[in-house]
Image 1 (spheres, one colour):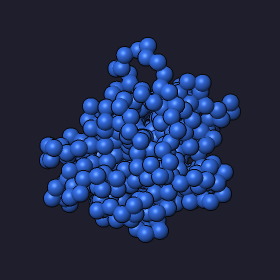
Image 2 (cartoon, helix red, strand yellow):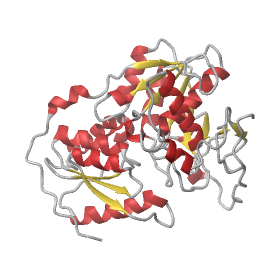
Image 3 (cartoon, rainbow, N blue to C red):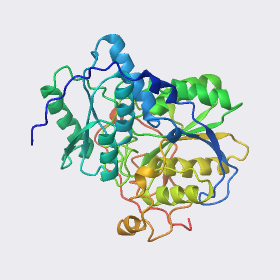
Image 4 (cartoon, rainbow, N blue to C red):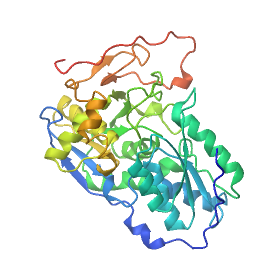
Length: 375
């Protein structure tokens, strides 16, 4: 491992003029066929906020640490990222006057690496996943090394920091200010931050609100076995404490082929689109709207399409990974429990458990094929 150059404290007080660029994003009505016609749903377009959705959490975590004296003026911030939190922290670092060191991995897209460096962040990349916990565990191990050799460095720990969900209280307030009623909220789940931050205020406003979590096939968050995942920014190989399992009424695991199909349909007919998380929540939101005609359904599109031009929107990439070889599922396969079967495509479960609280010694889930397009 090469030794990185020392990090120098920032001598600036930050750039508070950036703060008005955060949040206050538009709410779009989405009626694209996904893949079938549906009554429509609302999508908060977080790609139109400076720093994207996770800038809200980044500002909350750094501001909270500064108030408590955990983050000294000008001290460096070190965090693990698959990309989107890195952009948010780059924004918060500039706004508050902190250099940012981001620990990524070799699967981080070259365009994202370039963008993060352009925003002033320093990157450390791990070159192989850990035997247990995959890329995320490998990044955390490197992060601890960086912390040990960097004076006064602060680790926000986005996976477990309660200031992460607190950053989305403003997003909840914006939804309440725009919607007269809400029946169903659909949330992508990675660190668990934005779902945990939204559920409390929205359920106080609408007590009968149904909350659907959207995870990635191969993610361990809701009790499925951890597997290598093509989709980034959605799901996890570890168990973030910010995930409020008890808040969800059901969970859907979405495969890469379904997410790609939804992203491309959005782009062709609604103009607004995004990456893996956006495609996954759009698919499930359209399904939820069609399953309960008359229900008001809302979701959050975390980012835009630009990061994914070489993956989701690249025909060669999709062919190489078998994402366009067969028709994606048009509705979810339902399983009675997260351990009843291992999903490999769009799958729904109305039993939501915290896997860390589940009984040990259970047999591993049998593998089942993804449902076909005609299901």
